[in-house]
Length: 285
Image (tube, rainbow, N blue to C red; front, side, top):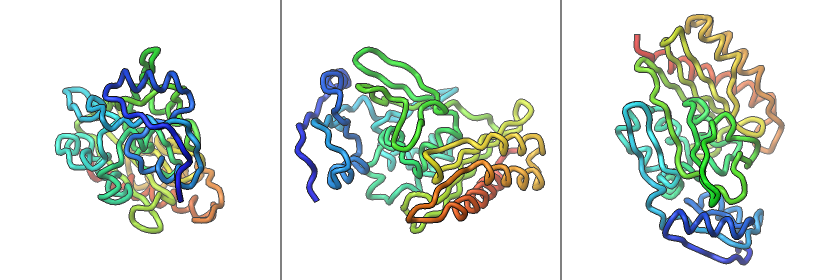
C-alpha cells in the first residue's frame, strides 16, 4: 500500500502552520499520524498537501491550574496517561486512555488528533463530553472556543472549519466529591469500542451526572434521560437500573461487520451500568 502523492510541509510555528492551511484549503494536518497515515495508505483521502505539526512545541504540554487544566492538542496520549497531576483530578482520562490502541500507538498518537479525527468508536471524544471540555481552535483569521457538545458533529466530522486547527482542550476542575467510571467492550484489547460508557457523578449542588456513550451511531452522545434518572434516584441501585434502561433505549446503533445493532444496544446498557456503579462507588461521601 502506498499513499497518493502529496506536498509535505513541516512548519516550526503555529503561525506558519495556520498560514499554510489558509493558503491550501484541502491540506490535511498531521499530528500523531495513527489515523491519517493508514487512511493515506488505503487511499481513502487524497490531500494535495500534508502539514506536519510535530515541530510545533507550543502545541504540546499539560498545564494544571486551580480551576481547570489545559491539554495541548499535540500532547502524546502516553504522556497524558502518565501525568500524575492529571490523574489525580481527571482520572477518567487515564482510565479511557488504557483502552486506546497500545503503548506503541499511544506513544505517537495525540490527544487533539484523536478528537479532531472523531472516529465514532473512539474513547476520547466520549470522555471529553463527560468532562464538559471546551475546545480551543485557531485559524489565520483568529481563535474561538467550542463546547464539546457542539464539537463532535458526526462520523469523522467536527465543528472545525477549513483552515482551523484544534490547539488545546480546556477541562473544568470537577467537584471534590466527583466519581468517575469508564467501561468498554472491544473484540480485542486496543480495538475500537463495540460500546463504551464514560460517567461522571457528583452530589454537589443537588446532584450532577454526565453519561457519554460511544461505539454506536455516528459519534459520542450523552444519555440525558439516563443522567436525570441517576440524579433523581439519588444514585441508588434502583436509579442505576432506570438509567441503564434509558441509556440502552437512547442509542441507535446500526448493523456492521463487527456486531449487529441489537448486540451493541444491549452492550451499551451493560457498559453504562458498569461505569455508573464504578463512578458512584468512587464518589466521596
